[in-house]
Image 1 (tube, rainbow, N blue to C red):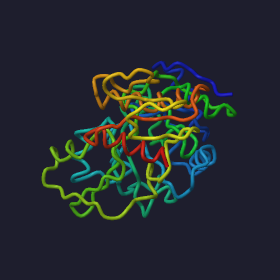
Image 2: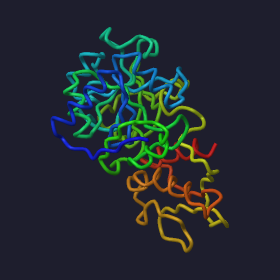
Image 3: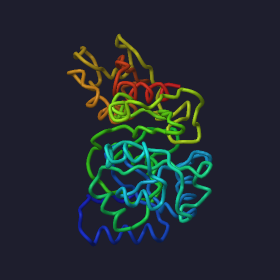
Image 4: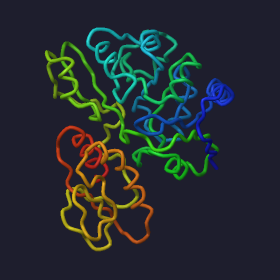
Length: 312
């Protein structure tokens, strides 16, 4: 059974987790997006444990998490437009595809010598990575294709048959995975939408060209079916259905199960999304889950991306 420990910034807890990671053990750590299943980023052994525990296909590459720009640049090539975006949005929910610089990063964890990299915005996890001095590979702490966890309880339930250590830092502030982008030949491609939108990026790089060609199915969050509860999920539902947990958005409706945001705030909706789906999935009164329409703009693009994959 997993062990949940409330996060604190004590040297004792940091040293204890650092020792576990250097022994190639896995731990669950909080970030601002979702909880992550963390292993040492310079170790194939740790990565293999992550793939095995998540039942994740080996071709799906892991995201490397660093503590600051200096660490990113030590292990990966951070320059030009990527450096501009890193300085603007890190620490935060942005992941960049960068070339591997250090041979400490196992070649087998790259895709054609490229890696997905970010700096998470969580004090505990940043401090831990800084003390470790090496990146962590840290996909969402869920079984492959299942709901991403935004609190420690959601992690606990998915890994009930393990002895994982879970660091509890409350509810994640963003609630869905980071924006994942790749820049090459002065063209930018959004591989996975998130809180940081194309509009946000264009304000920083107004000259950048946008590419919509091709798919990057070997990176995180690109499977056709993903983020899925056990129950069938229906999207863009306007009317309540019998024995269906109706998750609303906007003005309350009589009989709704939950409301992502009564005031129509897309950031609030994203923060609540996975948790409300989780609650509906574990409520025996309902046979399936219905989600109200979410506007296709800004954060709504990321929410609809997750819902479309969850409903497959």
